[in-house]
Image 1 (cartoon, rainbow, N blue to C red):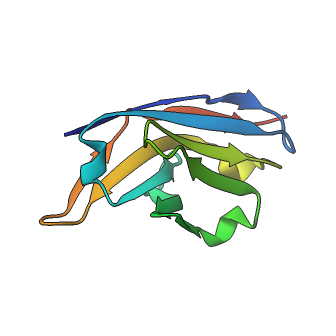
Image 2: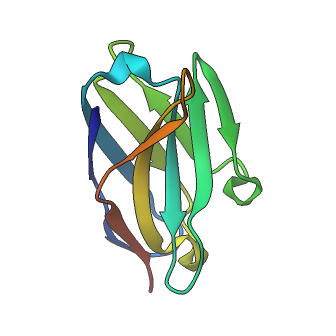
Image 3: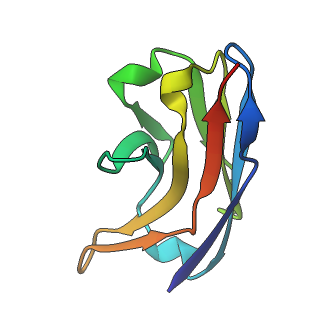
Length: 117
């Protein structure tokens, strides 16, 4: 089991920045991929960024504005979000994915990000 707790969300104006944090615990070394997802009202949950053994993957809409990172001990996962846009408004979820021997997804409770003037 992996436990994930997000923090750092809030209300910001367009163009501002936020840094989301995800505190991990449990059997974190069973996971191969860590990531951030988001879900806006009325929309499906979508991948924002992923980190796996030092390699990163970003959704096209990130456009170089977001950076995913984590500490070497896998205690924390971060998402630095710059130049936020109203379209970034969503609940952001931390994810840990085990891919072997079976695929298991672990999720945090989510943190609200609202971008509005």
